[in-house]
Image 1 (cartoon, rainbow, N blue to C red):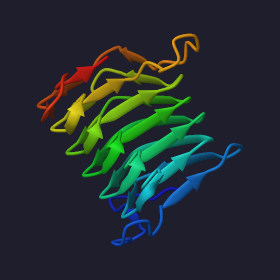
Image 2 (image 1 turned 180 degrees about the vertical axis):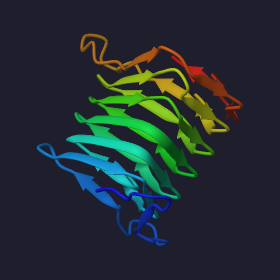
Image 3 (image 1 turned 45 degrees about the vertical axis):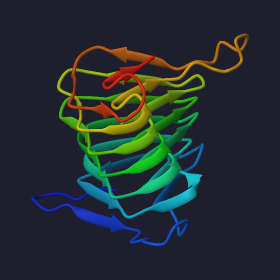
Length: 193
């Protein structure tokens, strides 16, 4: 799905009531590219992935995710899927875990020109990497002004409760910037491991 020229188009779920719905679901066999698209208005306080639930392959190019909330992954919830972002923003999203992004056994690559900002969570304002998930942050990517109530204003790398599972998260910071992220009562304003 692409919008060419100066104007982008918007997919707005416009869900103001709690648990009223998400914007988009990317299934296991799907391979989707969105270019110059604004995705907003998801609201799933008892489920995951406010704007997007991804268990397939999703590429976002110069696109935005905003103003969405969920139980986990206010902007996007990745479960054994692959999410790549080249340019664009995730902003003003909220969740219990991973205000912007929750990765549960999948991969998220954040490339040049991508910014995650003004997202909030009880755990991980920006991103939580959970149970076998991998997050790679490359040059030119930014996580800023995200807030968490307890741990990791910017990023939380979660280690499994089961010490024998080996299923903790992985964070590869090859470049980019994490700045002005805060925690109200816990630890790790920028990153909590």
